[in-house]
Image (cartoon, rainbow, N blue to C red; front, top):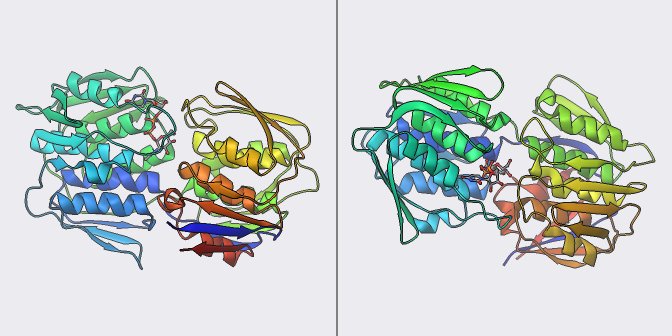
Length: 419
Ligand code: UD1
């Protein structure tokens, strides 16, 4: 099993180029099941989850070609696809369930494994299934699989999500594109990755209208057209590198981004004392001598993202005073804390709240990664002490961070992969 060795104490400085967002690529790839027209997708991050989704599409008969060097995917499906998504491809990647809406709306039948993914909470898919049922689908769960059918096709209507969910919004948005009539989606997730999916769907010919803040209307259509799309930048990767620079007192230029999309995060980091100069498509990060404590609550976009909670916690261990985090999205997302404590961090957990005591001295240690974002937080922690940190189970990291050791090394870090 591969490990990552980090010898800290080095400044993260220079320039880093941000990849396309994994969380935008996955639903966009799933939605290509809808179309028989040629689709070209650029700025695709070469990470394990994207490879798994590409493999899943190949398994069902898609003509997908992934040019990893050019970060480009070309799909031109000329024949019908299979409507079966097997467990072996969904067990490591929860987003695999996003093929359900596309298969069901296009082929009126689907058998999709119940998904796996990060162990950060129970992560049900009831919101996806209830919405599909409301659109006329018959759904049964048997032997770990979702068996869905809609003999006469899905139909529009009003779907008000009882809770904001990124995945459910995406799945139903895709399903609504071929549903009969108009589907009015309410209380939707408005993450930039959902926006990117909408942009892509509109490019391939779907009729989608956003009204108000969390309402989306989709008009069912039959014919699609060829399209070319560039995946939006990865906002979580961007903020991870901001934190890496701030932690190590480096000066870092972060390129290929749209700064206004991360204004909530930048404002909070500014409050902690991190300096960010904002330009049109890049930012420059530096930090003053003092880092201040802060209180953070994770919320759906435009709130502070749960996917950045573990990373900001490391910065809090270096701030003056006590900081707090309230995790509102996933119930089990403090699994990195026990590993950070092994490095010397002082963190108290009560339910969904963490109290992080600043100015702790972190020492290198052998650590175990537990999920995607927790893994990267351990890498960040490893950048601080000048002693050695070894992170086990980094397959989690490879699911979502493109070439992390190369990008960090180019900015001055001492990081290497051990076989
Ligand atoms: C997506 C992101 C993930 C991010 C999360 C929250 C992708 C591939 N993954 O995950 O990185 O951490 O959004 O921003 O884009 N829920 C239900 N029932 C459902 C669906 C969700 O109760 O049917 C709950 C979840 O348990 C969680 C909350 O809703 O408490 C939000 O989850 P959701 O937004 O659906 O997360 P994902 O789409 O899985």
